[in-house]
Length: 114
Image (cartoon, rainbow, N blue to C red; front, side, top):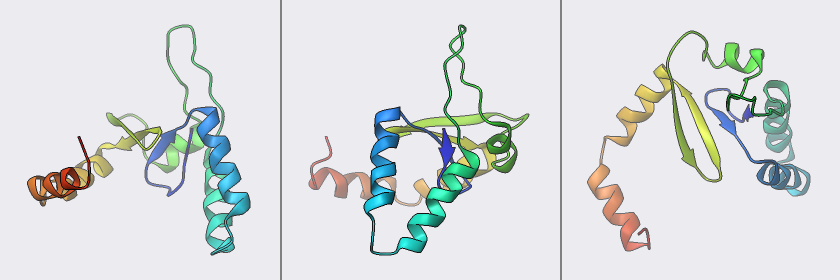
């Protein structure tokens, strides 16, 4: 689990994270951006195991920096990861998604969304 943007935490399966590591190695269009995002992911991230009660423990630095402590968090699955949002980020994301939901959905359905 980590964050790529210092706003939203992501929980990746190891196989998907290995693909991300390969991406960082091979991305040549803007190596500085790739290094910055890889640094952020390493700075905030850690491997996690599910405990006997089915829980994951987030790294303390990730919890603090993304303000995930002592408040509700919101989860959703997107692009091979589970995204974890603080309430403030969730509310901002919700507001953005509410701008044109019907038009957005119709356009994506025309492009093949089921």
